[in-house]
Length: 357
Image 1: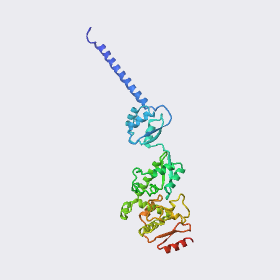
Image 2 (image 1 turned 30 degrees about the vertical axis):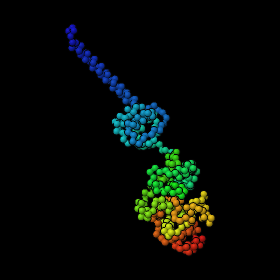
Image 3 (image 1 turned 90 degrees about the vertical axis):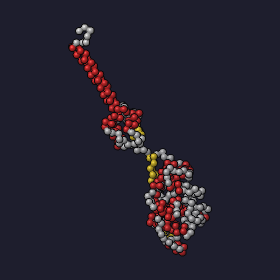
Image 4 (image 1 turned 90 degrees about the horizontal axis):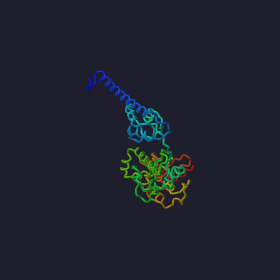
């Protein structure tokens, strides 16, 4: 009918055209979305291996953004929903990874889940038991790990050394030769390459804290004796430098405490050796006359501080000394490094003769 609505056949053709148009638009849109997803899921263009740092606490979505910025993946938005669809990302581990553009997404996910991080370059060194601060500095300097002067300067500073507790007991005593003497635990260490002198010192004083924590009765025993940790480490350092045979550590500690209680001067050769630039095989009378609070032949009581880095065995001996009546000991000259102990000076003189045999 002229001027009216389209008749039946015409209306059907229009409806069909609209439907086909909408279907075409839907198909084109779907194809576009599929193409976008497909392109986003394709590996990025191949490239050189990169090091990517995944920080602790990063969410999977933050990791996806980082990977896109580094060019490892094409599209972070698509990767995020790919992770969600695969129920992945919750087990990603922090660390430095070697990843390359062009890696398949599954390979990236597997690597991040397994924690296959790059092993950082490290420095490794061993500090023997009984080493002095100067010996530690010399050793690390020769190994190219530290600058000796800077190491000694930092060791003698009044730094708090992070959260280390033991060093907080060091008294403000101008007579102390080296502030951290005795507080650098002898052990094997592994630190990141490029660690500073302060990093190394901090790690070593923290290790002292850890080792002292292995002594559950430490605080209680010190309190019972009216003794400070600094004094305990000083005794332990004397034991360390005087004793080779483990079985004698507690006995020598007992002698030290007996002489302190008498009171008698300790007259320990190791305290004099500590004052020398180079230890001597044998001390002479003139060596024993050196003026120093560390010279226990001329000064009463303990030296102002430790004279070496004591082992845990020596610290345990100082904490739990053998209860004996000895006041003297002399090293046997038979190569055994053992000692002869005596109660009286006369017995000691006889032991000296016996030790020569």
